[in-house]
Length: 299
Ligand SMILES: [Zn+2]
Image (tube, rainbow, N blue to C red):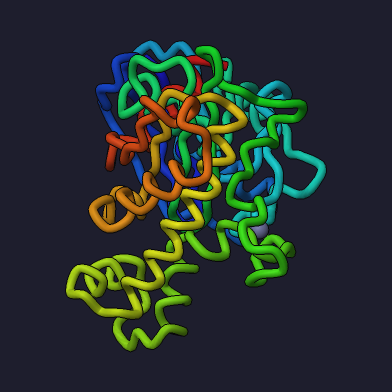
């Protein structure tokens, strides 16, 4: 069995699970998001000790909602988890010492990409991209049958490639990033600017679009078009078999996917788009559990 830790910006979970993904036990608690590194560390140790039972656990997988250097077991500050600092906190080594178990860490987008690849919508492929389309847009790439990490494990920032030169300001400091148009909060804000007066949540905007509200439809349409453009770049670069899209693209697959597919095909060569599927993520509520499992299983 594996001990999994899902470290999130608002809540975190620790779980004991089998290697096939069956969860034996789980504890969830609000993350002390503004805490410093040592306090965050103590919180995670507490969660892990709470969930641990009499089972023999072989290792700990951490799916971290923060930039992570898997090779060195480090986590770095994220906008919603600033406490880890900019030089990298040695979370794997410290947890390993505290729990007397080997520990592996992955960034959550990479860990979820692995989970969708092994258990979900990416099964059977050797070249796939996974994109979260939630609060932010992150990605994980499986290339030639393995997770692509890059020089420092920092790649895959497709949410911050420019899709509109000198466009909307992005939280990262750049302008015109995909995330500034197609993340859940961005779509909501743009719908409001287009005249949406309803509730300011991604779900409400999706419901608005289903009820044919023009502002919601326009905001989602723009997001789909820019996602399609960005994915065309990805397809041309990487010659993928499948692109798996999470969160917003799951809740609003009917509204987004036709436009995303059409835009992709308009901006990339047929040779690279024929047989390339764009599909919604399949793991739903299980994604985080399986991401923690895959953080252990494949480093
Ligand atoms: Zn950005």
